[in-house]
Image 1: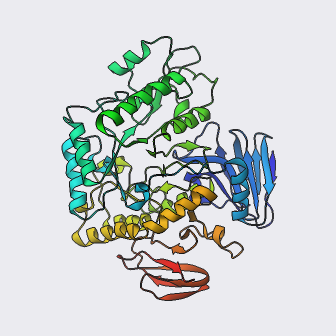
Image 2: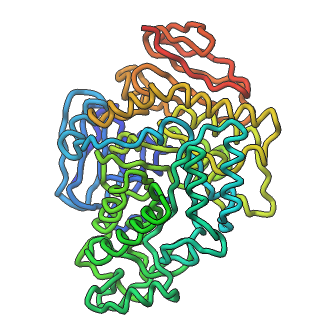
Image 3: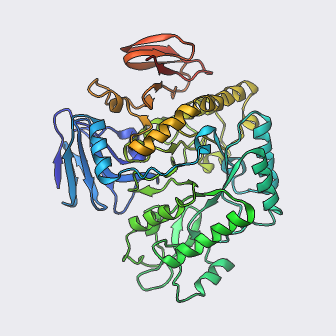
Length: 511
């Protein structure tokens, strides 16, 4: 099916990881394959495209689409093209109301009240009770307000063993109790993979009738390739696998007081990466990814980053692991990725860990931490709905830089009531919390602005994302805008603003 661009029409959508290439215009050459799912990184996706002319395109099935010569070329005719109004916002609202109306279920306020903390980059594969507690105590001692604390990969003895490694965590219950006493909610990292040489796997497959784990077409257990090697994989379209992991996680809740889980992996791509045959295709990999997300979202404290076509759900989403760099895959991605996530129906978005969450960057022997980048990532994250730390600022930064980063956390806390109100609005209305300038102020030539945004209706945020920059241009829409010192700016106009290292440029609408 062919859909031609209108005159001066541009488009957004499809995949969060492609945000820096948007909006798509008549000169775009791109392929988005929602079937094979060969995107640069895993993240939020949906077969939805939205235009600045009020049109949207929605595919009712996983498809492949090529954008070239000013047209979308779909490999299916099962595609909806509709027009509603004449703006990006009107297109989004029409698509959302028809295809993914919001369910409105509440999300715990602790996700938004303060920063979240994750032990991954700080401890990497050496997760252990002593260092987790040391990290949490240091956060509190250094002025970081307690929030959700995620104990990441390495708390188990092996993948598929759903209990603490007692060699690393000799008294996990006491640890969780102490963390709760400090004011933290405690979440654990979980993946749908099981090492095929661990006891838990052998016990699981001994139940022949249940047919646990993803299968090949010949009925044998599928061994899947993922970032940690080769493993069997739970299939949440199989009630036996669903019930099995549900029981394991509920034991962690009941026995240790765990509050929730970070559900990692389980992408559409990973449900296809079989190395010992062809995966049973009576269920699509998209349906298996959907079922994995559906399973995890029953726990009110949860986090996902691998999600296909689940707009409108009250799901806490995180951007994929970012590198410690200024450009693509690093700081430059944070704003556009999060803005596109909102347009795909995923407004409850957390940027990746401040300083970067891709551990391979940090273990490179030539790695050198860039303090300026760390600060600008913290500032950029501070007026997102959520922000998340991992690497300890006090371990890697100068005292001056530490204070600036702490100020970023405090800025988020300062605006937490406003953020929570915007979250509540979004749960009901379905509108993005973070909004493209074109979404909020259509028809003003803002289509290509992707480095500043509106937080709700009243806060304009323009983070510094260029190394060495101490100024930046800010596009002010119509109205009067007040900076953090009370200085007023009248829009519409573009003004170069001072942005010293300790400052995040943001502006509040003066009503």
